[in-house]
Length: 116
Length: 115
Image (tube, rainbow over all chains, first blue to last red; front, side, top):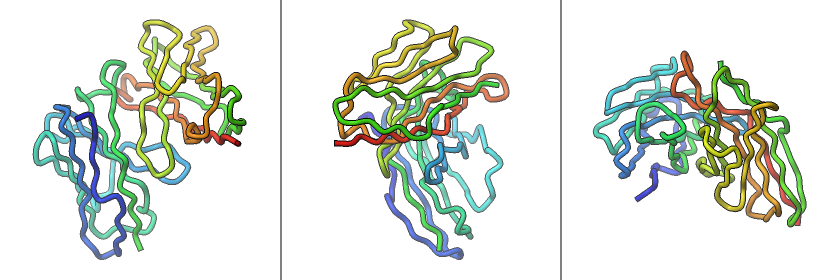
């Protein structure tokens, strides 16, 4: 299995809702990432988990709450979002905890979030 | 700090003609460079990577890129475009020091392929 699987593919939520995005990989990768991508822009790093511990938080607002229940799963809990949070949310994983020439990131297909 | 600049925001070619997507990098050290492709409403897929081995790197789907230190360039080429190549392409460098271990993305080049 060489894939990163993200669910749901599409999510529409109101500003008062609580929802979650899920990401799963079975490649034995020990680092997992959340990126946010606005239309026609490159992805922006949000969080990095290394060996199930949060290692990087790129000053993301607390309405986004990541969780790594085990080495194969990564969640992003969403609460009280704003319309400007509408974007494609990409999950990725890699063998080690720092990207390098030998440590390539594998990306999922993304979850497209719309906040009304 | 490491950075990459993609010189064209949009490139349009006809099917069967060559593709050239340009990327310049800035790095104090020998960089690790990548090209990723993103088809509409999809995730990113690795096309190829340079990690200080051979300067001409071959990737998937007939793409290749040449690392030129003297020109600080890592341009992506393909001899003959196919309709399925229409997508967004990102040139990426690995950050070091205070950017340690992070992917530094260019702004992207949208490739259109006309029949």
